[in-house]
Length: 505
Image (cartoon, rainbow, N blue to C red; front, side, top):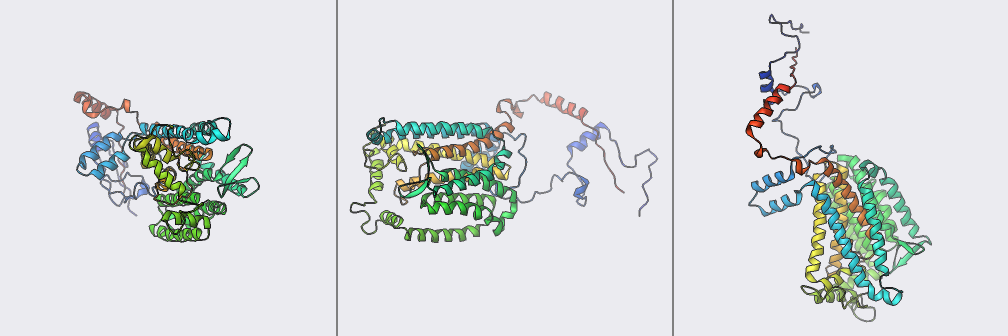
């Protein structure tokens, strides 16, 4: 054992040394030079030149870290990235998508959701007035119901925005259990069958579709579970249990018993999205996709109705002939889109809604929109969906929490994925499987659950907005007076605490 070090004749302390102000300023400006062999437990700071561990992609399996109290100006970061990669259009596109201020992202989400809901209510009125005027006392029946559910949805948005994130995670389990019980009640006498699908609960004049609320409950619950698992999700059994089994499997069981293939497809997209973002290995998705295709083929073959719809989509046999023409709805939907032209025939002037397209206010409402508002109106709606997707993507890209990232991208996959499936269905790219268009199609359960989902993402954006610096209070360094900067630097040196250097024997 080495003897203790004796103090020098100059009176140097045994363990500490107090330098003068000049040495303090020089040490503060110099990089940290601790030896590589210094143990981390001594509390020394990491070397400035030490490379960080290789990070995973920004949108997959990041560790939980506290939200930063202040971030550098996003516009400045975007400008530097644009100058560095000015010749790459793909880089400029991703810079635009990932950039923007946290203060504007919140209003992007709210504004696009509000605009889509208003357009949807107007189109529900236009497409349903002809049918409802002959069956009810007023032509505004379905429109008033849609407006009522929209009001409920926006009230829910403000409630969710003000809800703490921890509370949202705590109610994930109860919400999932309640929705699964609701799906089980669909098979009871309380269940109601519509167009061959038993997926409704009827309580007097109110019809509720529990599967729509189960989408949001599954996403929030899966985000909470996968965030706690961390990197363990890369192992197969942690990826399967409990997200796939029993979580998603119990929901899909009741949905398939109710013969709702379209909703089951959306749940498949949701589960794949949350597991991918969480960091599950890609080879598991290849296996799952193969099994999913096999299950879909079996489901089509074993159901005469599904087999007839797929045959009509592929124009096989006589599926498009006779009184049971399954091509009728899809063909007249294409007629509506074609007759709309560039500018449309005018709001309320559709011809195909006169009982040519059955239940035009539901899954095929986009065809009525294209006919009345033309290509310009259709592109406007698509741009609003794009704004909504960009807003969600920015929230996920800016998030430091695994729960926020997984939940946001899960909701984005649900809303945007369902939009693509509906548009592919009405344009003939996919068979008719009964998937509504978010925000636009008639349906209180679909509209309310989608607005609540947007509210969840807006709550994340609201927290990021509160933690981000106020753009009105930011000062650019190049606009400061150099003399003022020198004076501030001198004051910082005078007020800097005395640095103590510890020596070891």
